[in-house]
Length: 189
Image (cartoon, rainbow, N blue to C red; front, side, top):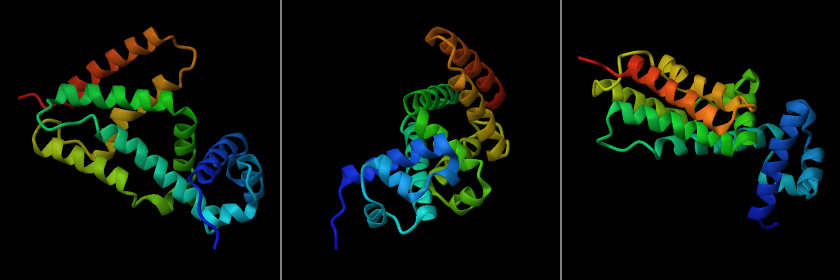
């Protein structure tokens, strides 16, 4: 049996992301992925049983990384305003620093045939638990978690996607977004 090599596997993941973004899921064949990664198709099968399993595994890894990045900024004792500010800024920074991976995750999320098999990933479950705890502690208003998720993160995606904005313009938009979210989501007695 051939030995796995971390560098080769990372090259395969990079090739998958690149090809998915350039050619879509159907255009990213195992042979193309192998060629872009600089490995043989047989080498790809050392790491993944088939194309669908490869896509799911890479998606789960990268989506989990994104959620872990978000959760690392939240600590016990933080107030609601600080939690919102940290989540918004951390998510924005993640998107900007990992633009290709972010777009891969987004593209995967919009493909029902693929994302339907990944709904049980742990990352979103942890984020869901955080939102539930914030509501139970009466830090956040008692809105549905799907709505909280959409209200918190969708606007950040839009700001990060505006490639023509200067850093200052994006910072101003983030500051305003944070104020809006704090007013809308934090429970006020």
